[in-house]
Amino acid sequence: MPVLVYTENAGGKFKKSIFEVVSYARAIADAQNTSLTAISIGDVSADELATLGKYGADKVLNVSNAKLKSFINQAYASVVAEAAKSEDADIVVLSNSFSGRGLAPRIGVKLDAGVADGAVSLPELSGGKFSIKKTAFSGKAFATVELTSAKKVIALTPNSYKVVDKGTSAKVEDFTVDVKESDFKAMVKEIVQSTDKVSLPDAEIVVSGGRGLKGPENWGMVEELANLLGGATACSKPVSDAGWRPHSEHVGQTGIAVSPNLYIAIGISGAIQHLAGISRSKVIVVINKDPEAPFFKVADYGIVGDAFEVVPKLIEAVKAYKATA
Amino acid sequence: MKILVCISNVPDTTTKITFTDNNTQFNTNGVQFILNPYDEIALARAIELTEGNGSVTVINVGEANTEPTIRKALAIGATDAVRINALPHDAWFVAKQIAEYAKQGGFDLILTGRESIDYNGAKVAGMVGELLDIPSVSVIKKLDVSGDSATVEREIEGGKEILTIPFPFIAGTAEGVAEPKIPNMRGIMSARTKPLQVIEPVAVTNNVEVTAYETPAPRGQVKLVKADETASLVDLLHTEAKVI
Ligand SMILES: Cc1cc2nc3c(=O)[nH]c(=O)nc-3n(C[C@H](O)[C@H](O)[C@H](O)COP(=O)(O)OP(=O)(O)OC[C@H]3O[C@@H](n4cnc5c(N)ncnc54)[C@H](O)[C@@H]3O)c2cc1C
Image (cartoon, rainbow over all chains, first blue to last red; front, side, top):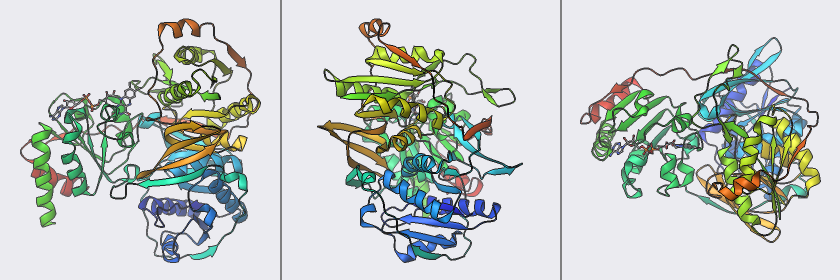
């Protein structure tokens, strides 16, 4: 029974995290000795759909329906569940993105499936058991959950699985579903995209500022450094509470959990609630004038110094590096 | 307007997380439990929306030891409370209990926090929505009501979406929706006498079991770079850490 992977798009394009999800689903299909079907909903070009084959999808179901132009989780969940039924799939994989998190529980109920959210590893299969590691306690720990139901839904955390280019190809088929009218009660009125910015949950590099930056007027250097590195900007909770930065940038236990390759913390103390959301960063750099700041205890690299002197110099050093690279 | 707010009882945010019984049980020893921070936001908005016109019922799936958290919600301003008397096994178990209760309640709006800070599943809102066949929307940063529908702002990767949704629906709230409210003396006094109904759970087949926990591997020692040697930091990030 094939594995089904839901591949969300942003403006008709797949993001890197979707190629991670497809690669991950491919590995599950291989372990189960079965095929992988991808489903895409919305306006995605045939060329773009075909790229899913590269990462291991055998077949791509394309759902293009004017009513499904914007994301309504109730309707999308119906479509994905119908596809799972028609493909006879017993495992559905998706991204643990904002929309994935809106979909997974609804699909779980529709399929009578256990849901593993926030997955960070491939399933362990031993003695008929199916177990997955997921983040828990807001990144302060991991829990291994066993899915005991016949059908399973897995939502993969971005940056938790590498993209594997298999160089294979997929056949693309149209897939039609009659979605019931009552699935469209919620209506999207407007989408406000900040297109020039890297999205925080997917970012491979995050440059983050705390209360040590003193005020919103000093964020120019944080943005400049993030732009230079192709990363996203973030902040600590008091910074967004004070309105210096939007809440969508707040990382930590009560904010967004990030898992970038590089996290640069500037003027952030490293309180336990902040560390909770960033502990899955591969490399942590801390810039803080207080050598006793708790953040240095979890950092890989640190500079003890005043951010207002260090960051401009770091920007110059990155520019110099880029000029020679 | 009748609002149901789902609240969970979670370890305080300062808790250092440890495990017992060969890493199979969360160690509650010495842990202070609190009202889930996101649920406080949901509760605060519910109280604002019903001021002088409506009611806010809080519901918690938990054993008797969660009552201090429920009383806190009543002290903040909830009208009444329901406790489903069971250990909250997982999101599916909790969602089934809440949906079962909500079926009879005639609520216009059901609110949850965007996730609980212990298991971070963000699943209860969607599951309850599906069980009741009503819309669910999460993570919301704004919630305004007019007549028999609401306008919400939903967070998406790299932006936001504005939706209109007719009642009844369920939403998961985050910062921006409201400022958490602190109980005052009058609230604390009246919370003692507000109704707290205890209901026995319905039977549920579990499909997810936690079998083990672990804490992240400790990191190595920090490598300090002098403040005027930023070029060598860039070099280390390139050659040693290989992240740029
Ligand atoms: C329920 C609850 C949930 C919470 N959730 C979160 C969360 O999700 N995320 C989060 O971040 N916090 C959270 N917190 C808050 C957390 O406890 C800390 O208060 C917060 O992380 C501190 O932010 P900060 O480090 O930016 O500010 P501060 O604690 O003020 O620290 C600022 C740091 O900057 C340094 N500094 C000052 N000036 C300079 C300079 N010129 N150059 C270099 N360094 C300088 C200082 O030495 C200090 O270390 C939560 C708290 C509660 C109670």
